[in-house]
Amino acid sequence: MHLIHIKLKPTTKIDLNFDTSEIGKGIQSPNAAIEESKEYLKSNKHSDFYNKDLMVVANQQLIFVFDYAIGKEKILIPEINPTTIFYSNAIMSHRRLVSFKKDLFENSPTVKNLNKRVNPTLFGNFFQLASNCIINLQAALESFANRQIPVNHTFMDINGKEFEPSVFHKLDKALPEIKGKRFKSKFKKYNFLVRKVIELRNEIIHLTPIEETTNTKYKSTYRKLLSFNYSEAIISVEKLINFYEPDLIEKCECGKEMYYDIEERFDSK
Image (cartoon, rainbow, N blue to C red; front, side, top):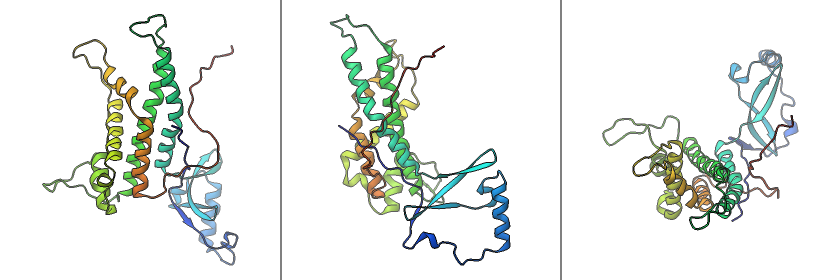
């Protein structure tokens, strides 16, 4: 299955219905504001120091940007919604993940045929991209939930005590309450795969050796990674995010291929 990379979206955008070239014309700024602007331009302090937000006009929209000081210069960088970045990472990992899995299956020895040599790089390449895909899908989900749930939202248990919610609680309970609709009830198959993404991510992050019956310590998790349906998981995460914020995950139509690769580089010395 071929997955197209997505558009990265700003955290905040405001559509404009007027000629942006007219902004500021005829407005006399107070002297204090002019002096503060001059000081900001000369200093190496970020806009936060002046308790200001920065915005720029792009494609007839106002979008938030942040400044980053490089020596005596400050560059402006659009503040990108992290959910779109994490999801894009997962998409870009997928293509090479599939390729590395194919290489692993085709070039590994079998129990009946040991003519092929064992090559650790084959599984290593696959694991890097597979774990990257899963971790970024989970990060997309959690960053999305955190953005949708108000900062002052209090999580209380049945006894009225505050608790730190899991990502499952945020997605299954908090989001439906806030949005007034429940993804889990409408898309049971997709929701099941979303849960599997989070469970597998937790297993990867907290990977510990198991020595119950044999000396091979990580085979259970590794087998899960090899059997996991990455393309359906990616689609399931997209469905959940767009269910609560329509079109946040939007396929790019630029026609360019974007994906992560692993290359061996050799020192020329």
